[in-house]
Length: 59
Image (cartoon, rainbow, N blue to C red; front, side):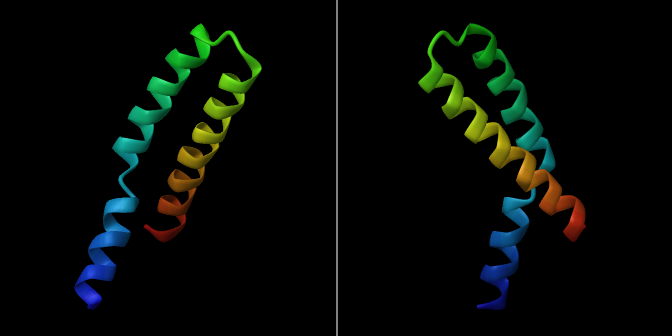
């Protein structure tokens, strides 16, 4: 049980993956034309930033 909790937490804190997501979101944001799409991109970027911050705090 503890192994599952630790592996799940470790997978969530992969900074390379979050940086990659942020780069992809930045490219999408440059081509964004609607307000709704922009808000969706912003929410996803905020989530990736939050995961990076959690990783820094935990590691």
